[in-house]
Length: 503
Figure 1 (cartoon, rainbow, N blue to C red):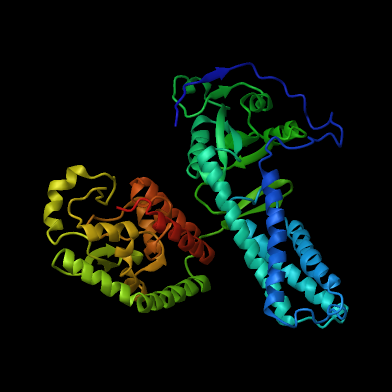
Figure 2 (tube, rainbow, N blue to C red):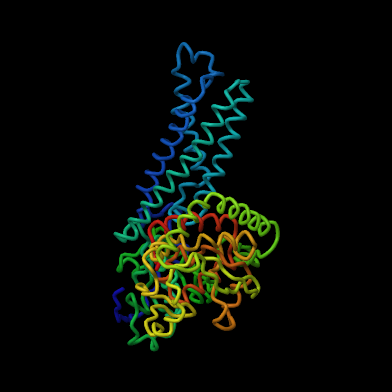
């Protein structure tokens, strides 16, 4: 990241908009940010094609596919029109009505996929109602296959499109929102750090407009240019931005945010507000408008109840099945370890688990038997901070062990810990028990069971700093859900295959 030291103060330019002198229909013909237009068109084509493909698959699978269309045997035109045109078009219309093409939900988060599932339920209900109303005896297997297949194919197509979008954002820096951050410098820098952690989010800060502390900002190096005393809309146009992000207390003055929203009317510039509420997921935050005042209601983390019981059941069942299926793999790995270095196959080490209880973790041994004795001579070469010792080229690791670490196969025996209820499939990473007490915020990660994988693994693993790893673990504790666990498990597959941060 290129650091610049830019600070410019100009007399504030009075705004020409106060919410009144504007024609009712004088809005921008299109928004400044336009990356979503071709992307939405691509999704429309993919969704229509997925629904048509699902209909074709159902027709090929079942001989009675045309039942209910009395003229289909002699003239299949109407049947094919319904199957390959009207039904896919109905999918697109219902997806649109469910706001599955809304640019706010595209490219990030689960909301896009939730809306696809709601549309799928609506399509199924609509087809059932039409069949009932017209007394049409449709082939239930054909209809079910077509609808379920369309839902699966649409979700798959959107996942592929999102993957491609993220690739474009990471590699080319395109298809992103260019943001101007407004607020005090510390607040803006905090938002800058948050939005730049994940380039796939498509948020690129290009400038900071400070609202307070002008003198203190002088001479401070910042990742983007800093301005003060400028007309915000004029500054956005000058730096080529398309979004204004109001950070923290910048909107604390009564009416200031409303006047800024008035000023942006018809400009095509988006306005977002980043409150001083970090590391809290969307499902825990709800807006309660009271007399024009939008109150953010933050729910407590869900650390008990039916969802937790379901998580425990899923962990035990998956661990049991995993151990049965992977038994031949375990045997092959055990033989490779014994050939590489005589000694125990498994490595057992005390770790701190749920509510501070200590347990012994199961892992395949990847180091020579005298690894602990050689640790003292390597401490100065530690490449990470915090409680763990990590080296990219650790001489204590034998060749087979290096492969096991790179592929994460050394952690497969932790399924035993999951089966015994000491660990979970997803959770904070288990830390050694001999590193002293967990003080301060770090203790909060003990509220849930440690996991075989987690946010730390899908976000960089050993490449992360200690503070960043703790932040991710605490975020998971405060915001976990079954859907989030499944998302992390899915992301783990890609991270393991890519061998990112594994050493």
